[in-house]
Length: 151
Image (cartoon, rainbow, N blue to C red; front, side, top):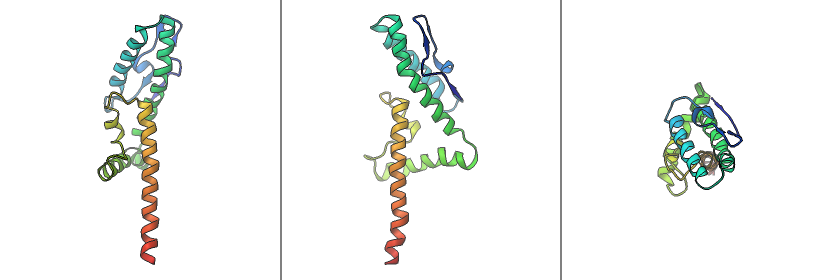
């Protein structure tokens, strides 16, 4: 898994899209869907500016996304226990906490990124926040219950 960035253009004539800026394994549609997002962002950038500024703006927006996409994809593909901890366990935690506290926690990363208004950078940051809060809740329960039972 590799990404090219943060600059994904050269001058006013060349821009990289899709796997050229964020090569990921073909799981979950991350590659093709993010390539479509690249195209949509390039189209938006080209609409209202000079080409040079448009490509620079595209780089600013999609370079960070490319990095986030690749980092998330790497986490999904770890082997063994690390893979369980970075992929399977978060899905389980998101499911449990999402049912218990639906207004507090967002759905798992893959479901959350289906919302077209959420970028990969935003989703990664939000899921990191969710993990911190979930860990704090679990730690409180694991420490608090034995303490209460001992009294």
